[in-house]
Image (tube, rainbow, N blue to C red):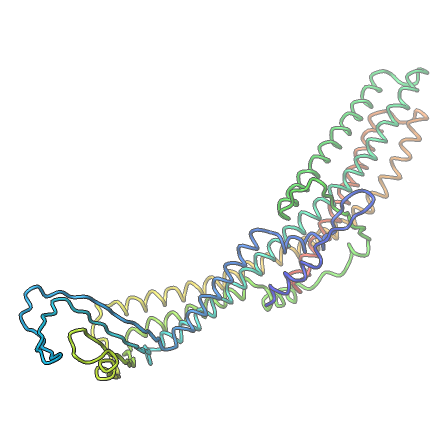
Length: 444
């Protein structure tokens, strides 16, 4: 039911925003569109529907079966000697019927009253299978949403990094222009100008490479959304320092909340219950089977002197009975089935423990990333301010001839590295915080 609600909400929210720059998609729009159109998720939904049909079939097995049938046949007796006599107009007529027709009509009811609880436990087992299928759909949806969030944040980070590199290229271009002027008046050598030009070329190369990375991750995001249109862009959100430095949820509280609402845990718990039911179903092999059957039928034949209606009446009969089958020796098949079911039960319990451990490790990883990157962002912010001031002073001193070209380029590299570190730590923190909230509440 939750999956159906999720799909309905996605259908209403799947219209992207159109901005002046072109077609730009927010994170919420990407998530809603993927929930509605992703092929993997749609295939998973079909498997859930198949599980629901299996459950209906298991419930139907609890009901009695009713069958109606009829059989008609023609016969031929080539050496038939017995004649049939009839009197007509004072004459005695005789004939020999070598060919004849017979028909039968019956209705049968059969109901398995008891088979060791196999049918009722099968219903419970299929109900759990349907729950597991639903959890699988939710797990697939969660995986897709998590991957979309990662790609979206990565594209946003790289897009801002492109802006930083564009500024760096602008600075390099201005340095080259200033260097050309200084060379023309004899205040700089051609060798120093060549270093400035080399720095400009390096910045241009880095910018092109970063733009290529933006295109690559955007393509991955489009493929996840099952989009074929070329007009697609990411609306880079405005991230404030308050958002980056928001309080990090407690590790244990996130883990406990995730245990209650994560579908992979619920699915593993259902698998344990299914394994317990499989043990009970296997033990039903030792139990007797009791069934009730009843039927009604009649027959007709062309060899009879009676009319068809009279034959249907005279030959009509009712029958009913009860059947009991007690297993005595089945060549250890039931014992083997029970042992195999118990092994599967142990396997399911270990799988549950493994998923709980994996869940804790995943959440702990996000928590550590958020804590570490917040500290990095705090330090990087101070470093960027310091490097910006330092580079501004270097430029002034370079113009006055107090600093050489090497010191200027080193200062520029330090500023660029500090800006990139700040961006990386900012978006890594945002991503980790989002994923922690996602594991805690199920909402990105």
